[in-house]
Image (tube, one colour):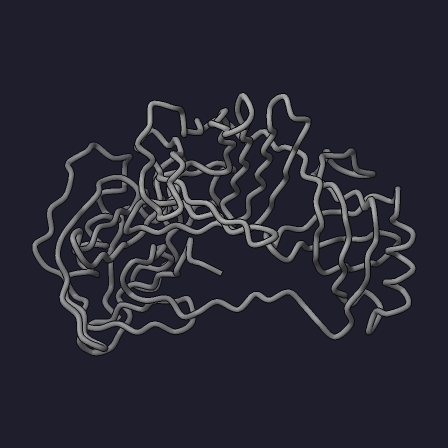
Length: 348
């Protein structure tokens, strides 16, 4: 493996602590965040949208139909289509919507064909700090009960919530104790409930599950969570290792990543968290080479120039690649790893 000599500041940046609660992803959104606005309605004054989006690809959408006393809640997973700069929501009950990510981080609703809606009416949700909304809806997830406490991991979002001991909780607990395969083992359950912020016995308030109605348990089952192997192109690849060293994002800056695009926007782009570079690439089944790089010339925090130079060298030395699961390895002539990346914001 090649030896890279970094300045002390560069090493500190590589081994920094976990990122702050809100960070800008490769897709251009600073998450977690809440997106809100009133969009048109065919038979009411408007539909008030409240969309909470988390970095782990979970979301909650509440739509309130004005003057109709109707509220529809939805939860699910989001992914990003980088070929169209589109945020795609896939939620409960087969719900799906697509939103163009604008440069100011606003979301603009797309039509059923994924095209922009040309209208003088407002189809835009503005971004703001995360302000979680309640969500009342049917939920499936894995329940674990241990030491007089229950925790529920929701299947669609993968998010975990403490379960409050109220309303129909006792029916849920009894069914779990009867059908669990072993003490503290997860069990698939179906409930109607509300995700809402509640005080906890210890620690600060947390988003929690209040079970309004218990439906049933399903032994010997689990949440479907398998992902297809991502393609090299049209996938955001988060940089995790550079020449064997872990790479963490710089607080408040776009995460280190690569994006390979085919078609009209063919090329490769990326960043270490400061300047953005663009160039070309050529590939076969296992070979990969980069060419014709150009970069912005912004002033960066101390030490980042060493990281950018190391990233540039790693790409210049790359001769091949392999994808195993969700991991992309870039390799030099001797098959040594020059960089390692992980697929993010992909469909489930």
